[in-house]
Length: 382
Image 1 (cartoon, helix red, strand yellow):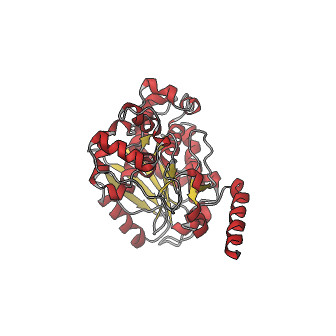
Image 2 (cartoon, rainbow, N blue to C red):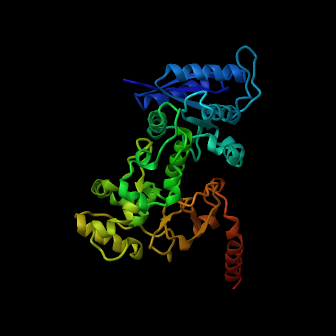
Image 3 (cartoon, helix red, strand yellow):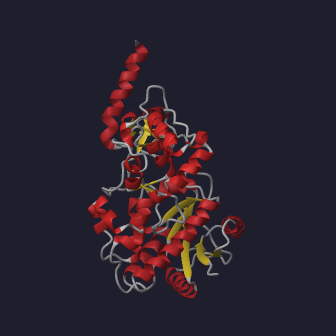
């Protein structure tokens, strides 16, 4: 068996870091870690290059701040994680080293206040996780599966590009698309895969997986189908099997469950034989059609607040509950790719400031938000 090996570079004490690495490795038998203190930049690059050469499937787990703690010999480096990642990406682009995933992990407070505002470093990392409780949870089988999927996916891309000496030639192999599906996707997305490096191809797919749009996560899948996942119980799992042909099976799929949005939308016509799209039906109507067609006991999702529309199109970013975007506000995003959907929070989540440290209102929504607050204020006074 070929193990996936990640080099973990972190300046925090061994007794703090090693138990977390052991727990991660313990959730996936294919994953191993080698942990080391950061070294001088050129020396560090030599170590990474050597480990990559000696590991069939390799990845790097990198702390955000490498310049805070002294090692046992009293030494400390004077560069941070993004600096090392930038140097590695540049050398990958030059063909000096093979491409491999670089994953950031740090304390959640540092991710929120140091990494997140610095959009210039976001493209350097394939995933971001917190060592402590936070939005980007580190613990659990999901993270270890994602790490394995990233390393295996990069190996696949290197094979497509003949060990990095040539470019990726198209989207079909990378995304595992049917040839006739290319015309159903945004042509700018399809064209973005021509003549790109493995790192660029990986970045495109990571963006697709991390953001809803062309691909959707399970919460948005449930919203588009009108279902309450928890209340539907086994019927929800049965439905996912029935519509398994909508599942994404391309690069990194074994680390994230995602579904093709255009295939999900086709369910209404191809499986339910309806003459209208699901988005024209409310949640109860969608569930009725699905239950009748497949003999299931799905339960429609209730609205976040009384009076909200149940013609769900997305999810509330703050609560992950189904939402009609007309009942929400658009939030700011660092991703501007036209094939990705905008993110929304419900008006309820906005006013209650639910998970406020994870989102910021889109500047174009500020006037509407001020108008809403003024309206509510007037209603209270009257």
